[in-house]
Image (cartoon, rainbow, N blue to C red; front, top):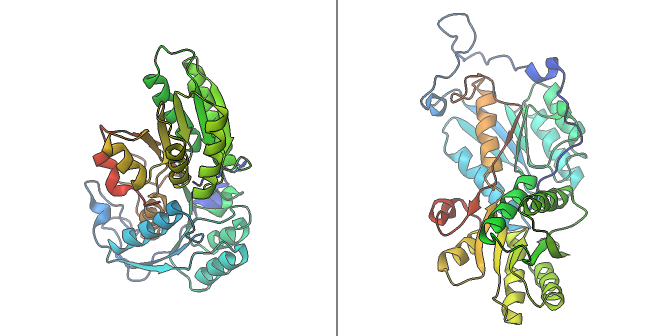
Amino acid sequence: MDGRRSPCRHGPGPDRLHRQRAPRPETEPAATGGESAPAAGGGANDEVGETVTIGFSGPAAGHGWIGAITRGAQAEADRYEDVEFRLSEGTDDVNAQIAQIEQFINDDVDAIVVLPFDGAALTAVATRAMEAGIPVVNVDREFSSPFAARTTVLGDNYGMGVSAGQYICEQLEGQSDAVVAEIAGIDSLPLTQDRSAGFAEALGDCGLEVSNRVAADFTVQGGESATAGLLQAAPQIDAIWNHDDDQGVGVLAAIENAGRSEFFMVGGAGSANMMREIQSGDSVVQATVVYPSTQAADGVRLARLLAQQKGMSDLVQFEVPREIQLFAPVVTQDNVEQYLPMAFES
């Protein structure tokens, strides 16, 4: 459900971005030079290295996607015997999350992974961590300053809308008068605005537009209520895009209660619930667009590389990138088996 873009898109100053912690005394020097040797390709980055401590802080798991984020971070850390993982209790209290990061700074951890409840509110404390020489990996909701993180892992909210719109265009090819409905999340959030903008642009590219639109609130109850109103207002619909699979549980309940099935639906986020609907072949749910719940797991992996002063061996450029934005693929019956193992439960 999440994702927030910061207005700060310019690059940060070189000193803070390229500041690295001094190698630990037990780090072996490279054969030439005296600095740590870069990891070679072919999976060498997964080889056991110096033990590093990584702290993780995120919101409370009141949503299926957030719960999957935290479990994914823990599971990824558990893969590495050279990672000591410190998981803070999830909280939606900004001051409590600030205190968690301050504790990580005081403990002199080797890296911090943060999915902030509020990116702007946590920017200052994340910047202090960076200034202390601790690389910060920002996940999903961006800080408001480029100095607050060494790298950022993002989903693609705009891309979700584009993927959903392109899929619907393909399915409704030639139907210029098709009725397309949209069930958004919370309209005041930038992530919802981005998803809707991408959806509208993709539909416009094939001559379609959103005929009926309602907004829910990422909850089952909100999804059911908003959808009930939509179905009453639109007696005929050809396709629906629902932004969020957690609220999609309520969306499906409203559809069943109304006895409607003349349309197909595309979900959003990529829950296991919706993927099982797709698998069944007898549901209105025909596809869902993934908003990866692997972002924190990717963040832990990147934090380990940064703490061990390694790079990304699959890239020609050695350094870990400043930003990684994950793709928003469409899951259908053709590829659902591939994506189901990574899906979260609503």
